[in-house]
Image (cartoon, rainbow, N blue to C red):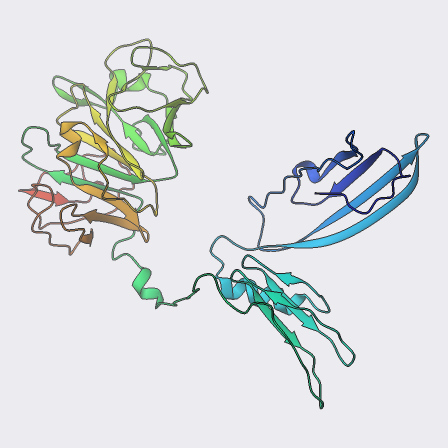
Amino acid sequence: MELRGMSAACAPQLTLRLRSDLIPRGQVQHDFVRTTRGDWRPVFVEFSSRNKEHGQYQIEVEVHSHVDGAVAQKWVCTFVILVPRRDATLTEIHQIFLSTHKNVRVMADDASIARVTGGDGCNLDVTARNAGIAHVDLSAPQGKIDMGFTTIAWDEELIEVDLPAASHCHPHPSQAACLVNAAPEAGEQRQIRLFALEECMLGRFELVDPEADVLLSHFSPDGQDNNGLTRRLSGRHAIIRRSQQGFEIEDVSRYGLLLDGVWPGKHKPVALRLGMRIELSASIKGIVVLSVTAIFAHGVILHRIDHGARAECFYLLLPEAQPTLAVHAAAPNAAALPMLFHRNGGFWHLDVATGKETALAPATALDKLSGFARHNRFASEPYPECWIIRTEGAALCDSTMQTA
């Protein structure tokens, strides 16, 4: 905010008070201070619409001039900011603004809107530029209205296309699923477990009322053991989430975890890197040991490097995140796996050679998917850790069934 037009005789310091639901804690106070040249330093104020509902929010501004510790003069201004929903279309934003703002005279710039309503004797100067919209309604029953727009050009074309709702639906919506290969070759996994979550919780396997998203069990040389050392995993052990640097992991357990052999400390997020070794439980070795084998813009791949290595690996994907065909950092065992992603509520396969996208669903028949033969079933995974009945070839299967 810049202060302009104040007389040279006014106080050398003015107090600015703002009140709004868009300001942290509801209000903030700043001071305008003169420089040695006599002009005023600008004041920077942050507003945020995070977690706010769609609507209009009022901002009240007061500028106080103090003399001998008392308020000698006060200026008041009130204005309104329109906060749209994240999924609001430009048409909805325009309609709401135009239906609620009347008798205003503004400049429309950078995709904003100008609306002027008036009668006889109006002298208007309306400007719309940079994808702005100007709407003028003088409601004149007769006579002649001369109007001049300095620019009626768009810097770029803005086109909205409404598609039928059915075109956005995935044939089999799911946030967790499993791709199964009954006879894995070197580098492949019996289960490729898929998760599409903004924040993915890793924790102990529980058949009833699990606390985590990725349910993990200890594997011994004899196979999976849902008791024993598995009980030394916390129900909520570690969180993997998106960060500014990529993806990060945070220890939230009572037993701790080791990252490349070092305990990071509880509630201290650490950025994931390719090849990082993740050991769940810091006090007992080998309960669950994972390795970061691929890092994409839309997710990460984790492989087990303990006795469960031939049983399962994990895709932790961001929901509604489209992958790119750019080269990503990946270990050889992850590079041999299919490129999968989540969009429109369900999982998809991307053929990196052709760019073809295929939705994964029960009726999906895929001829090639990174070396896997396909013809079987796909279903959501309400208990992601439960074993899947083995089938011939590879299948996208219902993981609620347990092996004998």
